[in-house]
Length: 251
Image (cartoon, rainbow, N blue to C red; front, top):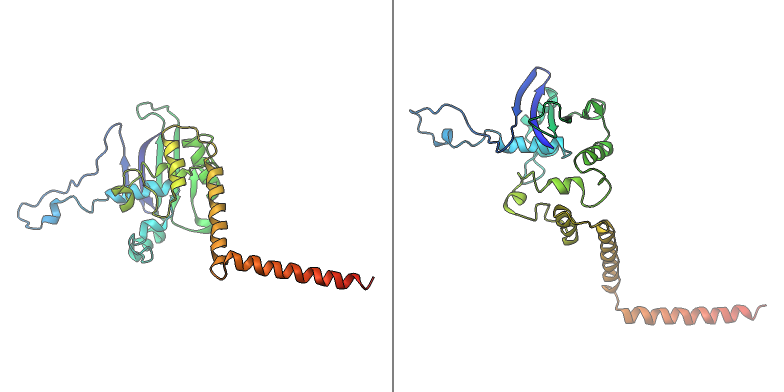
């Protein structure tokens, strides 16, 4: 599938319609240069919305809305002005995907999302409102047919293509969060290389169970050694046997 267009609109109308074409698409600053100005920032091309476009595409493909108006460094501070504008003016993002940009009759997928919550929340695919689970399932079936419920997840797969966060921009292969495990990367990379690794999810679950058991073992051994536990167990078994022997004398 190809991106055909990205539309940003609110209750007052269309704010911006960005159309895409086959090949390389560039976002450039077309603001006329003021020859008399000495401010270098007017000719740098910064702050024209390059990262914002990528964030909105990612948002339409299932990313959290908070990423649009949250400080990427602290993960806590919010840009109140941006958040209020998105909510109060009821901004609606529409992403249109097509199988062939040159064929007007090609299969088209229209994804719509807004920043409101509960009953006012819009999360539609081809005009049909979806729950969070249905939204991810439908997107996965459309873009990676038959893969829903398997590893790697849909968000992990597209992380290799949608890069705007510092970690994914600076890293070539490890495009996920810093907490991602090696076995998760193994499954992702094998998938991207076209290798059939149907037991990737099973391996990750087994490794997760091993880590949990190892953590529990370390917690136990942090208080006493294994030998101490075995000695305590032997004493308890001996005491139980003595009590059973005494109990048998009453019958």
